[in-house]
Image (cartoon, rainbow, N blue to C red; front, side, top):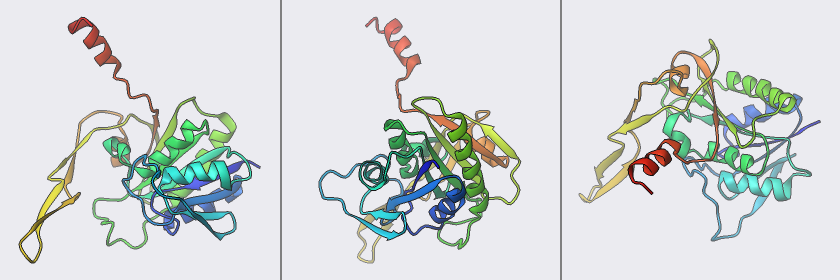
Length: 254
């Protein structure tokens, strides 16, 4: 059977990773290696200034006191009996759409798998607007877990393009209209930095909390999820702006 590595950025105790690991049991031999605590928005951070430790908390289930990227590296290099056939990161509690890909530890874990030459998927559950992360107790992970199972089997059978990971976003809705292959969207946060005063009147700042404004573009990840579809966006690491290369050569005469 194929060897499957499951990881995330929400931590080893998150309900999303438990649902994902359970769903994949029938697909292959599942190993779960995740951060000890939540590591949301750490992006592709790598721990290099302190030692990393791991602990086995259940059969084939480990936590690492580091980032999602740390978890993938240690799992592949030290903890798993062989190189995994596929890496699946998630299920993230909240969407990873548009520019949020750059901040996401969930996506970064899949990116590290891609860099190691392993087919990799990041999967996230997009909460409805009325679902506040700090109030909702039981988001519906079943649709995301079931689709992750289906997609994993498909990737293992049909392979994936080279230097590519799949960023998957699933609506938190009992009814899914289908699946769309999408482009990365664009968003800007309005008033994303909150200025607050403590009881002594000293100012401090809290990043986050602004309302996102989505750029209008057809066939984006946000557009698909907003209309009840699962979004599958192929992502790679080459950040070169090829239009800008042409512009600089022509306009700057470099």
